[in-house]
Length: 126
Length: 185
Picture 1 (cartoon, helix red, strand yellow):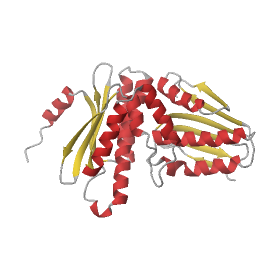
Picture 2 (cartoon, one colour; picture 1 turned 180 degrees about the vertical axis):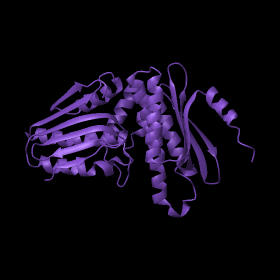
Picture 3 (spheres, chains in turn blue, red; picture 1 turned 90 degrees about the vertical axis):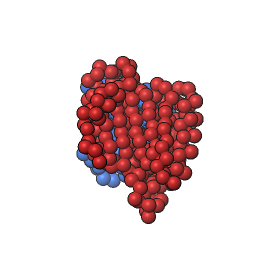
Picture 4 (tube, chains in turn red, green; picture 1 turned 30 degrees about the vertical axis):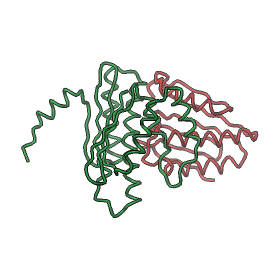
């Protein structure tokens, strides 16, 4: 599997997916014109990596996600939940500015859907 | 055509509390630029981070709904591309001391009006908890083949609106109408 790295744009996040340690990073804004097209390769990479059975960690620092990105993130969490239920080591962390109460609610809805470790971290000004 | 009186236009915007207005064909970069101005204006007004997030997201959902609709129409009926589905008016303004207004207008097929207004009427009847449950159900549904949307945009707008969403339809031809949607956040 290949290391994937994509630079951020105004409406899409920086993405880095490292097969050597199973670390996935998504940082920035997420409101692409077509989220499925944009995230298709990311979901494919995750599916393939998860098949290895190795631990996987996803670091989100998404400051805003439109509804189609939210749907894609739920799809990612579903994949991770399945892996966790098969006994795989899964960890998700989300960094954001805790003053953003609405984003906190969005993240809480993500947390409600999973049973693996999902931590949040306060990064003021992010 | 009369000479364009920008003073009149400016006065109308001023009275309506309009912070930003765009009229023309939409593109991703225009949506990004207007969004960035919106965040700056709303952010400066001492509204909380949560409010900025809500106004921004209703604006994004409205403008991307129009883009997605235009893309669908282009794919469906290539021979009717004369209708400027992708052209829209987007307005962001102050509604009162506590609230912002996000409105949009675009050309739609008359045959699409009823399903859309029925959907909005239904959403307007739901309370916060019911909208949350509907959102959760909808997000679990598999996406329609070839569709670029998650079907969550209107539900999300309803969740963030502090009063019922309003629409207005003006018939523009035998098969088309101008559809305006306003949300108060």
